[in-house]
Amino acid sequence: MNSEQPHYPKSATAAALLLLVFMALLMGGSMRRESITLDEVAHIGAGVSYLQKLDLRLNTEHPPLGKAIAALPLVLRGTKADYSGVTWSFSNGFFNEYMGEWVFGHWLTMTWNDPYSTVFWARVPMLLITLLLGWLIYRCGTRLSNAWGGLLCLSFYVSMPTFLTFGPLVLTDIIFTFFALLTLWAFADMWRTPQRDTTVKFGLALGGAILSKFSAGILFFCFVAFILSLRIWKLPEMPTDKTELNAWRRRRWGCLIKATALAACLVYTVYFVLSWNQPTNTFSVIPGFTASLFVRRLLMPVWVFLQGLTLFAFTASRPTYILGHSYQHGLWFYFPVVFVLKSTLAFLGTLLLAGLVAFIGKRRIKAGLIAEGRRLHWRAVWVFLLVFTGMCIVSRLTISIRHFSVPMVLITLLLAPLPTTLQALQSSGWKMARAGLWAMVALAVVSIFTVLRAYPYFMPFLNSLSAGRPSYYLVNDSNLDWNQALPDVEQWVQHRGIRNVLIDEYGFSDPTAYVPQARRWNCQEPGDADAGQWAVVSAGMIMDGHNCPWLLQYPHEPIAAGSMYAFQLPAVIPAIGTPNGPRAPGARHNLGGAPNEANFSQILADCIRDPNQMQPTMEHFQKMYQEQARARQKK
Image 1: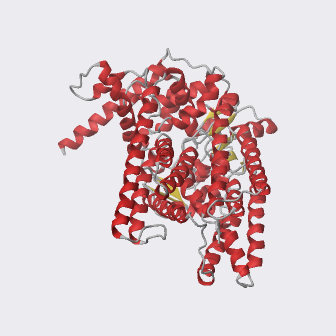
Image 2: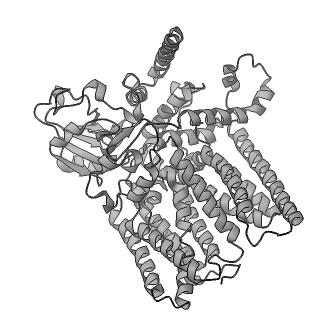
């Protein structure tokens, strides 16, 4: 039904490039008008320090590749950083770096350099990686089906609000998705043809994935699941003779081991180079470890990697919020619900159409629906999708659709056989096939027009399945607002002619870098002096990050398509704890689910304002934890 080698018509290639240009324009236009988001504060500062100092002390809970790539244009442009003060020196410690990365990152992006140009140039490489992921999706879709199948996958990828939102941001999610898909394809290539070049390509892709995000560990579960699937459901490419089959398997296992060793060497080398100047005194947390400087330097890459992995595991369980309720940890239905709400209806409709067509195609078409020679790749797509989705569902970290980006790409690739299946059904005499083809094209066009209408506010996008309910009631975190809307707040303030505005942002940076008239505010702790003023509150703070539904009884208007809301405070602020007033202290929320006695958002905001507060703050927490440990021992 399909040839093994894909055919790329010039018209299809031109259309793919046009779609990627369209995506670049949407992402570029939106990112130019967005302020720095929450995690970018730490990531940009860390990335610059990696290249300028060859020191990995900051943000070790995420591998360095994406941050270093984002920092490259900043370093080439001569971005300034002060490595002589406490903002840098404080972070030379196992736990200190988790606090210091935010302070150093804020000062680098907001104070020592122009925030607009610094953030813009850091985002440019991430935008290019997002486009490269789109091209990879087109190539993979084409090889699974034909060029029109690849175009269909690409059409929905470029019109996904999730990738338009997070693609240009300095994060680990999209670059990991790129390397995860590249690893999947290289793995299937190696399993089909186990030779030196396929093994090397797979090893390099796997190394890139590990250097992008610690979630790359899921890939090894995917490999095992894929191998087990071939034992249960064999493919025609596999030998039937038992002796030949065992040899076939041993050769591929050997390539897998070699490729994994190559990936490990690549990861070690990158960590070795980027930690070359990092002090080795962090080994002092190991009692009695007195090895020579040479041995410490050789062990430093392993130590930093394991340190980051430990911090990653420590933060992998967090409270969450969805559909009007707060929870202490992740929920199995979180990602399915958010995926449905934050996808275009046209994309969801195409998934239903593809499922129906696949069911009918299995019954009416005897030939395979996947391109000959690509059944291993199709099996890998399905297996990797099931494993990644399963891991997301059981995860205790469910706070953003961006953590579901790998399954979203693999779900998109499932659409690749749809055009050829409809064409085969049309040839078989199925009367609805022609209508199915037209419906497929129409849905792709509608999806593109949907994001055009949403431009430039892709982060708070929710489809009409939200049924008119406010977004802050349905979802949380970066599904709504991640502090990216401050330039829109400044425009709103100037339009209103307001001299002072209270801001309760989704973060802890100083908002005056974007809104000079701003004063940092907590909607749970209003004062009498706030009466009658305008307050701008992040949508994520109304019911999740903070607990402020009392504001909704007063005049308010959305900013940046509902990322933030402006409230006209009353002439008299209701008393705390009253039915129509701010919540009592015991009913308050803190960003990230932090307990009331450890409001990290306020603590970090204070340390950003005065970095000299970092050491006393750390000592305070150490004393508090020691007292709690002694109290537990007495019990």
